[in-house]
Image (cartoon, rainbow, N blue to C red):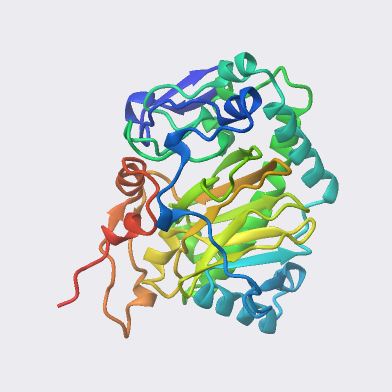
Length: 365
């Protein structure tokens, strides 16, 4: 792809970007101006509203993996990782090696950005046909229901793909916090990538040889309080178009829910943990052994919430499809597709569950 250089970093020509999204108002400003009202475009249909069953059994909590054992090659914990990815597609990792100081600085930097006046945040607004910057993605029509959240998205790895015109460089400590966090979570991601490679029948470097180094982007979300959290969604149900995602949550506010056996299960934060979820690219590469799972975010009327999603994904020009090691004894479930074509198709739609993987599935006769 053609690259430009601007503001100290190169980036993909916007005419050839991943997709575009219609502008929408800052929900943070809507709440600031009128806490009690919920605009019609944010009120979801009855069947989509966030209803969670009471008294869910403890067994319906996502698995927890001690990542320090994974890095040591502990076979029992690697089996637990494999099982968690097969049965849940979501897990929380503890003892992952990212220092608490780095986690806290990242959360503080994101909170500081969203505390800026709107006119300051708008200096970093998304450009046309561009996914980076402050605003929203996946808004494809004037009629669709909107999510009760604001976000800023930045490409972070490789460093030469950073576009600093979208970075609030004048915000003290922001650039340093993001760069340090990005570097630390990339180490965790590379260890996960190597283990996925082994679990999918190759050596530790198998996926890296096929797909190249993992690219990284960070989406920083802000969920304001809502007077009627029963009517809105912080983020609509979707699966991630990534290889996998690492999520840093608030320690004391539950907002993430995943769809498991047709029920919406809350993911209760473990302080200083990271949530890992399988992305669409890994579902396709594993031929459906690991599945990307629908998830959503809900709101509350008492406390705003931030979350920080680090997306790990292949190079745009790489072709993704079932690995040979995953179709030896099983029928091929997905067709091959260039990652850029897949992601453009994804960004051309609103968030709608698993529709983004359905279009690459092969029809079974």
